[in-house]
Image 1 (cartoon, helix red, strand yellow):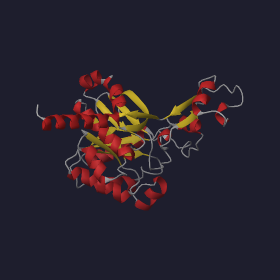
Image 2: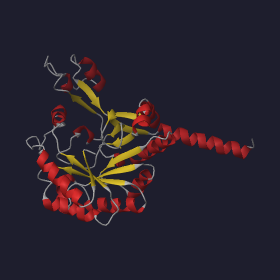
Image 3: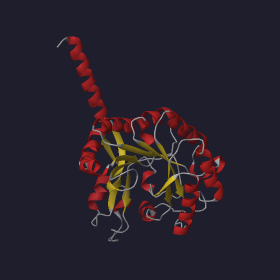
Image 4: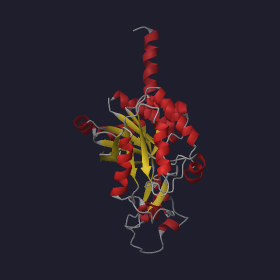
Length: 303
């Protein structure tokens, strides 16, 4: 082997090592999911989101920081809570809590560490046509880590999906989109001023990024969270369908609002504005489903 070839191989190996050592902040790796893409999925949840959707079912995903929280269901109210003691480190607080009610939300992991967790479920991908979904939070808020992870997942041949709001740099979105089998793309409030006021999203950017993904030949599946009082009214659904009409879209996912994440707000000591909002009835969901189907789309409830 000549010196030039040796240098090229060495440089390649160093590049691979660098990719595997990139670190991101993850708050959960959920196995055996039947949503968030086809087949049985392993969902990697990224911590941190630039938006502030008041109905969010993963409030632990909002903050980018690692958080120390108390699970109310485990707390035995034994004494003055160690959570309030300023003389203890976070690790010491967890160790001293007798009921195990305190825990971290968020963990810094390398690409290699995530791959090792994902690999444990590889048999399910092969037998079910499933794969790995990167979710959040907002995946693209940790774009460099997400792209590095997707590149490595691709080398293993794992089907990849990402869930995104599209609130990100187009360059990063295109980079990861080209590595994915599908991009699950959320539409929310389709009126720019109200969307900004309620969620913090830049609607024009989101719609422009969606268009760019399709123009690049990337498979994108639009999703509409069904949030009472926000996204389910006739005008909002009409705006979604009108925007999608020029594109070659075959499938739309409807994501009914639910209260599964309500208890998380208590654990985080956060106010939850949607605690009294009812889940859409089966009749309401069915009506929207029929409407969307009448426009020629295949509709999946739950995604």
